[in-house]
Amino acid sequence: MASARKKAAEAMAMTDVVIEVVDARLPEASSNPMIVGLRRFRNRPCLKLLNKSDLADPEVTRAWMDFYNRQPGVKAVAISAKNPAEAARVPTLCRQLAPHRDDGVKPLRMMIMGIPNVGKSTLMNALLKRKVAKVGDEPAVTKHQQTLDLGPGMTLTDTPGMMWPKIDHDADGYMLAASHAIGRNAVIDEEVAAFLGEILIARYPDRLAARYRLDAAAMAGLDGPALVEAVGRRRGCLVKGGGLDLEKAAQILLQDYRDGALGRISLETPETRARMIAAAQAAAAHQVAAAGEAGEEDAAGEGGAGGEGGD
Ligand code: G4P
Image 1 (cartoon, rainbow, N blue to C red):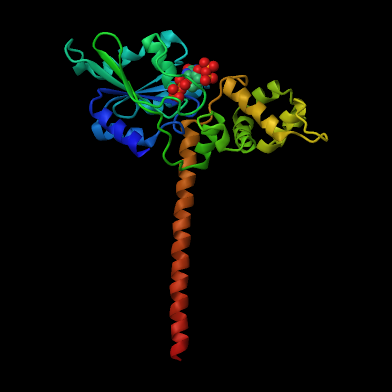
Image 2 (image 1 turned 90 degrees about the vertical axis):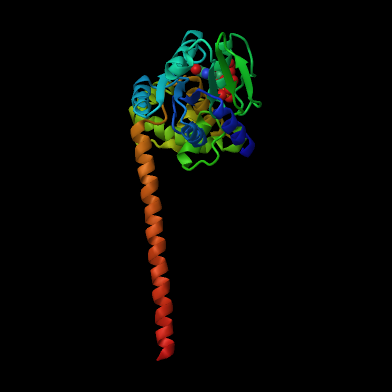
């Protein structure tokens, strides 16, 4: 990680525009704070690509674009890198962010960054119209930094997949796992599916009802784990002896989300994100206050003991 950061920092110095690729379904959970830090340090403009927008809820994606476009030096665009026409817009958008490089002499130097599996290789392949990096659904397939010519006067550098150095919120880990940015072995499918289930029940209940043919009675009072069970029953996921195979049921729910079989779904919105952060801050403040009170009580206790001893 330290070497990835060092390489990225060096490359940043020779970059005019940072192309930050995030997953449109979870743009904040899939953005790496290290990238933002490096970019701001060098004061580089950023084209924020909300990729896989074909899988994300369009209304929520619009809200995220408004959110990012209010940030200085950021231009947010929703794309699907799998669609060559949409990918082809990227160089023009970068040119607009670095007009000083449009003098016919200096090349426009772009650097593509993002955590694994957000679609960087797919985008690069589309831009270069050839396969330059192995595109795969397993995290961290792009390993080496490389600079490629992207037509006259334009270069594109990619960086090794830089995973979030520290996942500050449990929800981020679950969102990343549900969207498969965290490897299959790293997390338990059942837990992730139950987390995803909670979001789907709260925000997309009709999709669930339609996909798994769940009537109003089945939907009433449903929570994440119960949804996984309901999917298992509907799809006949049984273990030897007749019990429910919850792991299989969880995988079905996760795969349906990943493939878009449940429709276009976003796991976070600017509002849910703001609420999550506010709740985390409140919990942290509460902890500090509780620790402070405990410290005061200890001190008082010690003082009291000393007083007693003096009597
Ligand atoms: P990375 O370099 O950032 O690690 O990501 P990569 O391009 O390898 O893409 C990871 C997976 O995401 C690939 O799926 C890729 O096809 C898919 N993907 C990338 N961009 C988009 C997009 O805009 N929309 C959708 N729906 N999927 C996208 P895969 O299952 O490994 O390959 P494939 O079978 O889909 O080709």
